[in-house]
Image (cartoon, rainbow, N blue to C red; front, top):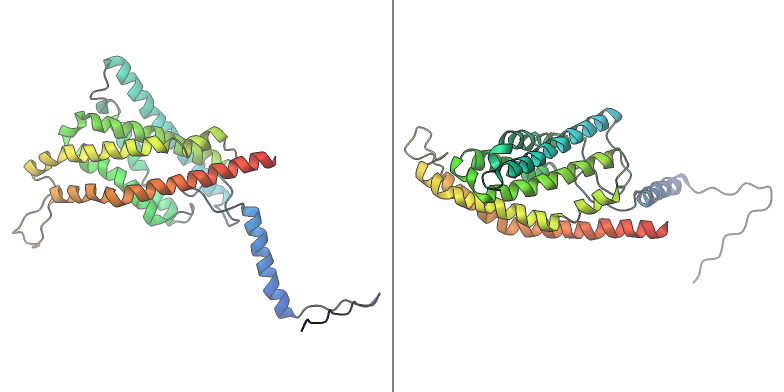
Length: 279
């Protein structure tokens, strides 16, 4: 049976109000819906995002200023590495052994990325601490525990392969973050951020894997970072085997991250196109 419609109130009489419990139950839902509509979708990137996130309390003015300075410095640092590579290539006329021309700034600025883990841990960037730590530590590991520690691989062409991929990626990434924080993100940088990885990501991973593979015989011969029994701690560690396990870990991890970025690309760029059409 259909419920009868409530009678309209007579002129001049106050309109009956809803019970307090109904009002308190309705308003939070309205506020959530308004916030979702204002947000324009989910966050599309690591902390800063190209599109507006759902409304939430962001970093304060001081934290935002710090993040802008940090990202500007990191952008400039990777530009220094890019210029160093080009100058060394023009001077030598060859792409072999270019690593030595950018070794110091590469170590400095790649290690500087460790601060991104602290940004997440302290909450000034709303990203996963675990995921950020994994991404940053994998590069720091390759920089110090492989390329720096195994001198014989520094002349390998595979080192240049991942260095070039990292350099282009980081210039785009830190520029993307800087302009996003300033609320003035050019479409070209957004497009580059979500497009060039299609080539740069496999290129970087290939260089990383080939460099680790090239280091294996030298690690095995020298026993680098390995601990053998017997010892007072009754503990053994084989760095050679560890590197093999690191290489194997790329098999499940690379496709997941790569296809995740492809999905993010479709979402972010399609959202931008729809926004342009609506204007």
